[in-house]
Length: 256
Ligand code: GLP
View 1 (spheres, rainbow, N blue to C red):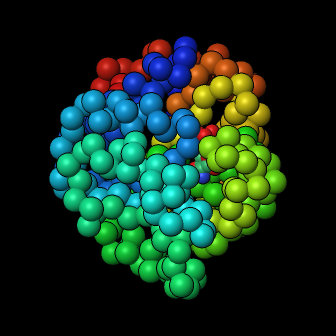
View 2 (cartoon, rainbow, N blue to C red; view 1 turned 180 degrees about the vertical axis):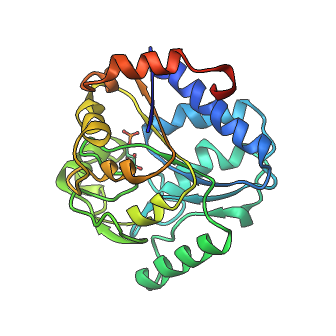
């Protein structure tokens, strides 16, 4: 894993935006795995401002709430439209987000997985992290080999995400999410985490044992992961000085 610690979320987000911009410029038909959550909002704003050419890009989102229609203000369909897709030149046909209203959730999950492999797989997968270490909506105790499927949210995640809803009762219990096994097949995983409330999950994911109790720790088994943090999210890392030194000493050709 490459751990990049930046002074604040603004600088860290700019770095992630540069990395995504570089990917799209170098591979105009890139397949991107996209994430939602508060952490991604500033990143999508910067990507919109960068006026990239998205016409050849295909995207697959990580997850969606079960039972929310696409125009529900808290659905991830709506989030993606508002934050990114309505502002870029992507063809709607190239946008993939799980259908939380599908008549058969297992069939929807299988079809999503099939479509993803038919595109040749994800070049760059963006990831946030939950306060308990979840990626996508792969909650604690998820199989580290899991594929797209329905999951039940933990009380902690429903509490964390309640800030986007009028009340906690309105947060759905069920979601569709890419599995951890699916995520691990992406060619490059880029995880962003900012703020003190993510410090424990990040320390576990990066330096803890690989365990389903911190689903993001499965990324230790992936050959190419970039973790972009602010100081607060990096606070509990034992080797933080080492990561800083490594990044500062990078030769120019390795820099983002
Ligand atoms: C949700 C999403 C995750 C995201 C997490 C963190 O649970 N399903 O993909 O990583 O929120 O969100 P935030 O960036 O708002 O802390």
